[in-house]
Length: 392
Ligand SMILES: CC(C)(COP(=O)(O)OP(=O)(O)OC[C@H]1O[C@@H](n2cnc3c(N)ncnc32)[C@H](O)[C@@H]1OP(=O)(O)O)[C@@H](O)C(=O)NCCC(=O)NCCS
Image (cartoon, rainbow, N blue to C red; front, side, top):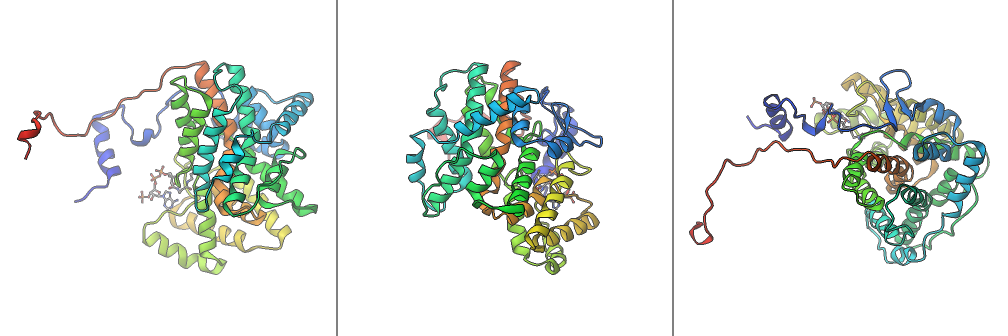
């Protein structure tokens, strides 16, 4: 009988006790940044429960915590927020890159190339010290929103927006990608975006962070490691899932279509985006937090369609597959309600996860050991070499 690659890999595993396909369950290094907690908290950043951070902090506070190792004092937070605001405008070489973009280019490919370009033009490009890596991290955090928004506008045939040096990180980002919103709805949207940025900021050895650490372990520069991380995040089994969830909700269209759609999808053995997790088998604590914001936004906006589709799918997936939603699922509902273009869902993930990636690059390089595992060889047996003229 034909075996899938995964089954073939699994079948080989017992003969090699050290081997786990996809490194599942393998402890691949040490980290003091984030703890995936089996208990009630679900997840902790540098010891703090994710629910406390999402409930009380600004994204700037959490970014500071991840990068500098402790929650900022009032003065530290003010200085850090001011530094981020002052660094928002892009270096003068980058607008040339942005204006050269063409419609149809993938925003994550654009972001990957744009981050490379920011690296070339960074004043600390040749300095790999901890202090310089931190300065580069802060500049990337500050500049990525403008890079994403300008690229998107140009590819849509419009002019880039003027950099705004007022407002919080979340308010600025929301204004850049979805336009300014006033009143209670605007405030609730900025708050929901602030929370989603906190929830997306860090998740220990996920694929993109691990890619960043592998790259950093050669002692290459920060921008190289972040470029690898962006490329890794793009995939639909990782960061690309939030965009895929939005596409799925739009495809389903109405709450009464969910049941039929799900039956067809499961019959065809297709994956339902936004469900399941390699590590969080019992559910994702972050999902319930963003779900509350998605529900509140749907009430405030008077648009219950996306939330109802999502809530129905959530219930049916638990009944049918025993699977619970991950962070991407209700985030997609909140982003649709905010009017964030679907193609920018994964780039927005980068606006947040850049903090976790940079913290990991710094940690890796401070306690470095080159990451170089071994492979289980499954190729042909030993063969005698045949000179070219004797090959049939
Ligand atoms: C995240 C993910 C890649 C984890 O995958 P994994 O650890 O490799 O899980 P497995 O492939 O071992 O899946 C175990 C079983 O659950 C099923 N399953 C897992 N996620 C599923 C999903 N989203 N929809 C339908 N079935 C799913 C698998 O088909 C498999 O069933 P089977 O044993 O009957 O074949 C996977 O759950 C997935 O593809 N989710 C959708 C994409 C997504 O939301 N990614 C964001 C992650 S934060």
